[in-house]
Image (cartoon, rainbow, N blue to C red; front, side, top):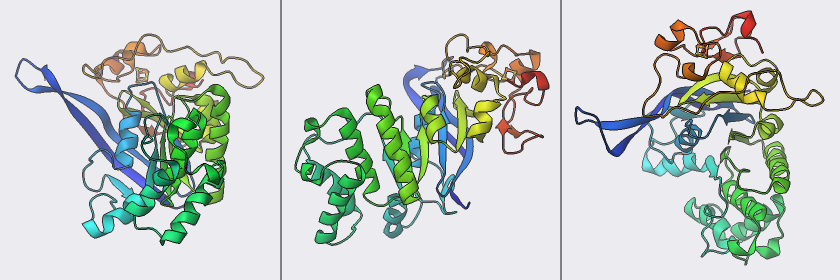
Length: 329
Ligand code: SF4
């Protein structure tokens, strides 16, 4: 499969107002550090990890909502964001975002027709008649009645609003959708319907997803590959089946410990102890060492690189002991 999106050495830091060191310099949160991955055409890459680990920051950078340096994000090999003004909209059309909260992501003053027409207008897509047909078509694709186009967001349920948000993302015919926790604000009964919709749209339209989620059951359902983030860095990347069957990073093992395997109950793995450290005071060496049951002296001083396993180069792990047999879950 050809590469659609590549992200290479993405670093994002936020200076904190009001937080100064003794030297007078402002304190900085390193939200994403050295993030490298790619997504193939038609592939879903899930980005998982605890709240506050930097997943959303990466998603926003990929969608062009956070400034990144030149050539860090590439779409079909070209930087979509640092282009001549006349070309920018073409590339921006290709990456759309679905946000977590369908209640705040839709403008309450616009009816659904206006919401769906807006990206078509901005991108200059189609004639007036083609746009009218397209918005009706989008409603059908996301399972909403076209005669609801005149209604306003507050007249819909949470699940329906998320479908409207998905239709808005589909409107400019993107190649990649960044879906940032698209299920977490929905009732449990609606989550699986929305997940199935995303799966169907992917199949029908050949879409790729960057699927940001802390819901590992949903990730197992939708993802082709999974990237695990901890405190701003990737700690493990593997295809879905390998990651769920044989995670090599103790953090991944801890995340999966709470997920029952079908017919086998909970796994015999150790749950993650303690809380996520403050990103303002990152631990030295391996950032996971204060919570890691396998930590040794080297872990406190030397940060492990994200490296391919000798036995499976498609699985990359940032742990000094990833190759050690006893570490296999
Ligand atoms: Fe644990 Fe050490 Fe591996 Fe970090 S490098 S995950 S602390 S064993």
